[in-house]
Length: 331
Ligand code: HSE
Image: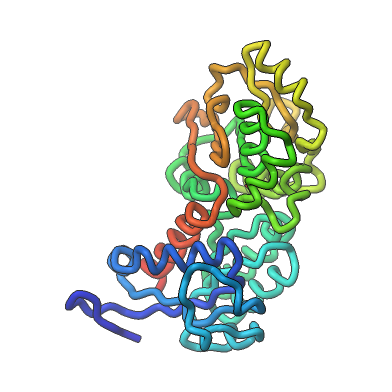
């Protein structure tokens, strides 16, 4: 299908969106906000034409034509005009089954869903390959930071030996507020929830499960090893006390929830735990909802990628980057 923008003939790419929650709303908003430049960069006019969402009436601060809503996912998978499906439901199921249905219907899939990817990485990537379509997931690790593109493209000339990451915005926000504003754990968590950083059930954030999902994806991409999230030794931040935070400060350190993986002669090691970092460590200054990943490559040396790891618009930036890349290269 073709339309015109600014006198230039553009193809039209229709998108089906699964889920209009915080990130879905941010994605819809960012697509409207930057419509012209996105069309230029994609070489196509992108439109979300159908949305799978039960909660039609929620106040979202955006206008969505009610005719776009459906409660039947088949309306999206069987729509021949839709070529890309964005999955932003979260959770392992039904998200995985829906992504498989979309891939098997010959549609490209873009997702931010770290839980579904960490659990079903092979099944999803194999279904994409079998159907000759893409599954892209830049937003699943590090929110708006283009770290997956860097690891799978720009840095592929390297053998990696170590990865350290601050990979959860909610817990980093809580630890920062407890450390710098003397906030209580509960107040800081409520603020993180209000700003749309936290998972629907914030237990996944504070117990470290969300980081385990993200580290599992990184282990596949960085070291080519599949490790399911529940096989990663994980300690979250629920046991962190104000006294520990003060003690870290007294020693010239900061306490951060760190995901670590490194290779030595005995193999690959990985774990997630609250960790004292010296103030001069590159990750020590990563605060609030910001995330960062610090990688050692045998050619590039030390490299750190930094940006907003959570929140509707930063995450939308990564989601739409994937959509634009598909529209430009594959449609
Ligand atoms: N709940 C997640 C976080 C969202 O706080 O980092 C982004 O993955």
